[in-house]
Image 1 (tube, helix red, strand yellow):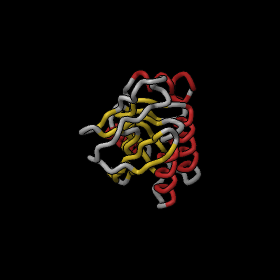
Image 2: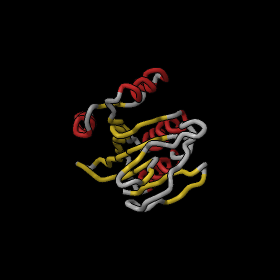
Image 3: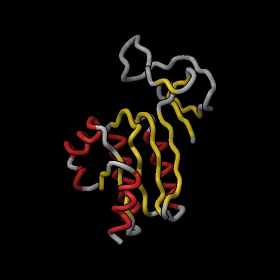
Length: 159
């Protein structure tokens, strides 16, 4: 899994398990430390991984999808589509925060796969994240499922 973090807008590729100094988050407020701690003292804003299951590429996302981290998710989705993966499931069960930039990346990914008659489904059960999709009307655009297995089963049944 690749780990990325942001440090006042600068991108760093952070190696897992390496101790880091505290990072001040833009959302944490003045003088407050960002509390998205992962592992033994490392600060992580976004973790991305992917694997193929039953012919569908599953993208695991953990952390915050915001203006700083969304470009990494965009790059991964573009890379997967460029490698002829047009059936995608984005697992957002461990997403702690999603802003409009993150929504834009997901919509952009959906447009890319649909250009190849593909699909992009989401796995999400967190009410605070689901509320964002409901408010924006994106529940009518994305298939949103409770588990990766249900998302894959729903996609397979449509074929």
